[in-house]
Length: 513
Image 1: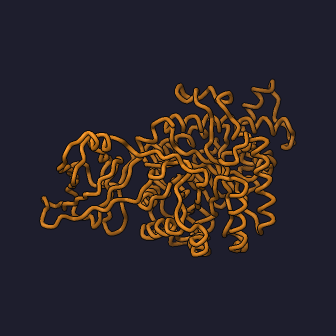
Image 2 (image 1 turned 60 degrees about the vertical axis):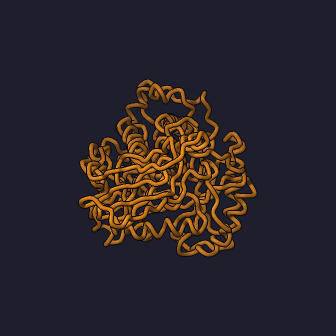
Image 3 (image 1 turned 90 degrees about the vertical axis):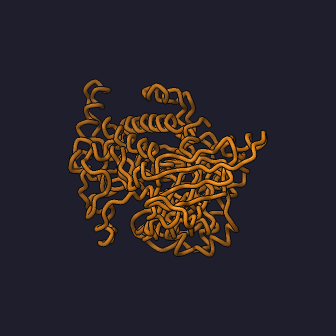
């Protein structure tokens, strides 16, 4: 069980004060959950990635709160929040603790070469909970971005995973564990590494009220030159009458064999996640095709065409009957200049038509705003978004939040002209949180009394602000009642300066689509 910083259940007393007139109409209204409105085809994903390095968007709880508030004001509806990087989670993970002895990134352990010295001194936070609450308070769809996937470490760092699990690591023909991209990778063929990544994701969706999960371009073969570790050679030999892998890493049959191993795992992964949370948004952000095939043996447009006939029968009992369907694909069309973006995006659209069962609406554009090299210009960004719309793409995701917040906030706000719901989820799936009001003169021991008359028909959870950060106050939920209460009253620890109700969708996520 994850340890979270919240008062014990016994310290939270919940009293529902019900004053109502029962009618059949009210009874029907109150027992109905969220209204699932069919989204209009013109809706689009407007998202951004939020990373822990090269910016201060989530450097402190106050920064996190300000970031989510501003992104909503600008007109975004989705955030992809980084939760797995350089061998550590951004939240307390029992899976990680069992594997390497620590449950999240420890202080002084770098996550990226660009980490600031002051950031390294910070103890581990439950950054996922922090980002999740602040995003949902502002009505933003929140996708847990497991950025590193099978990637274990940057070559310059030596995290626990790299030190403690050398048998999991992929190697080139010379025995080096460092791929040409400068990173150390877990072997996507190793059964323990496979299970570890899947368990990290399943644990997160069990413990957090997520709207989706995303894997980056790291659910791939570590690089076309890799695959000469002892485990891979053993499996290859067993399937090739004792022969060793070809020394030529571009050998067509050797490339195909490794690619199929990744395809096999990708099917199992998405089936298991779907079995756990049927409504969860499952996202992939790959490198552009065919570059992704030539360097990482990844042919993701074909993944979008998978049907029930392609399912992995090695999945668990419930999962093996599910189609291995990914919900969205966000190719990283990171280009300098609009002409290069246009060319590459149109190529991706064509590949999706020919190889991907014509699922262009499920493909979003990853658009580079900032990063190494010059920033994009506003005209380049505007034209890129408009091209995606013209080609009936499903939206766009900005790399990364610093560009949205610091470079183009006013231009984007004017361009969007307001907020729009996420196209895959009901319009009221994530509504802004409901403030409670302190009842003066009504207290009990060390507690304060809070109430609200703003009753929704959703399942909610209580969150409280202690002056530094918002946190969940209890694991329990406030269920919609069979009768309409005129007022809800809660007795809570007096340390909280503000209290709110926030929608809880964990039960809805378990329901079939």
